[in-house]
Image 1 (cartoon, one colour):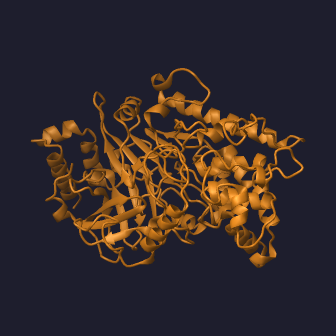
Image 2 (cartoon, one colour):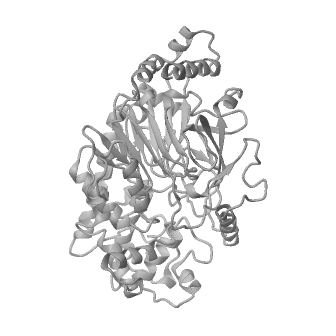
Image 3 (cartoon, rainbow, N blue to C red):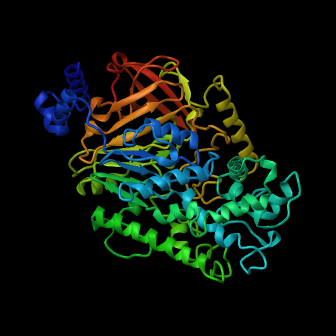
Length: 569
């Protein structure tokens, strides 16, 4: 069976690459022969596992831990351990949406302390932006406190009914005082993309204390957020342990993406740029992040409290003129003057819901440095990772890009055929997800926000408009959980994607088993993976196709026999 699988994969690959002979296929893909041996002996055991954008969803985290090929099975969340020789990479965005921020951070940090050199914690924009809180919530009579009536709003959001603290207070159904707890509510909901985070924290604290949520005041919630950023606090500990990049063998991990302006670039440093090796660049990036976090911690621990020297325009051009400000700036998509940030944090390989491979210059730089896989998260795309096979002129080999944020899994629409209308071109399908998304889009349109040219409302400096995301949900991932796993050797056959899709079906394949995975079909569907059995429509021996428009993503199963009749691009 394995030999038949290999021969079929090789024949498909020859047709895709327009190769006329077995020998030509083997020369064009040096990993092909290694893959034959893998098929003969079974799949290689992965030595690293990747999960990203958990955002405090402890139910998802528990499902991932049960699924993971690199974690020891059967352990409680507060006692996790890695299998011998294995690594875990968390891709960033630890908090905000799932209702279990503190529990997730506790679990992850315990694992990091148990395996300090084999657990890699990347910093996401949702992690870095909490560094703002120490200075911006300094209570009166601190000179840093700015009354609501005098607060113009943050630089990336200067219009709209709730763009200022005063406008937000006026819009509340029940009157709230202009104090740090209400300012935190405004920050989370209006300019941190976390409208439910405040009440979710209240619920998490109440559950931990065995009381009703109503027993906890707004100031109790504020103290929890502030305490997590103080010495020994959970989020501060995560920031101190975090890094901007991780390099394991020939695989590079970043939170968001890698564009040409970020290649070799380190904030505040003039120099080598793309001429520098990837190892030296990763080390310099992580030193930069650690230095900024240390500076921010020292400022918060000072007897006088946090400082914000800035200029007079602290909420405009002086926004990041504070301790740790360069890292805060690096975690943003745009700068106060409107320029796009050259960042690996707030970037992605998605444009308006469709995969967008990296620029040839990025592909060439990575391949020349021995990097064959680039893994990231940040922007969600359905219930399964997107894989992209990328090549560049004058560079040997193939770069595989994986973007694996599945935090909106429950919003996927399953269609019966690739000929189904694109999202938004027909009546919404049965189910509440897309209807709610349409309502959210209408609500967003009713309250426009001023943004830089080419940006998306509420998402500063994003390159392509993507519309409004699905509304907040208690379980935005539904039952979906997927792991990306690989090997230190970087063999294509060992890059494995496995888990459960939004309809309950199984996804389980190694990249080398199916050469169509990671390619774009002529009809606009992306081949995401090879399916196992189960799910509402079966699917064993089928390919998973996917396409998106904005945040609406469609999935379709296609039998292997039918797929072999289609020509991919």
